[in-house]
Length: 75
Image (spheres, one colour):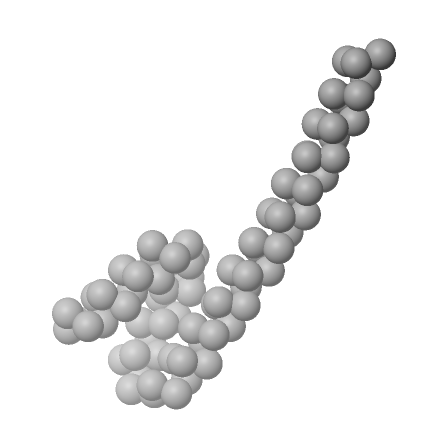
């Protein structure tokens, strides 16, 4: 495996990609399809962005609950 390939796959792990996504990227690289790899990485990015949005919703809800609890303790 080339240093570039190892770096790319390691970067995917660092970005929070799942093991099966990393394996799929490795298969795509072995098939020699750079455009398919780019398409797949963009999909992984969209998935991570969706997870981030879901996490933000939970953080926003937690902030709301904290404010609500603070109001209760002021009474």
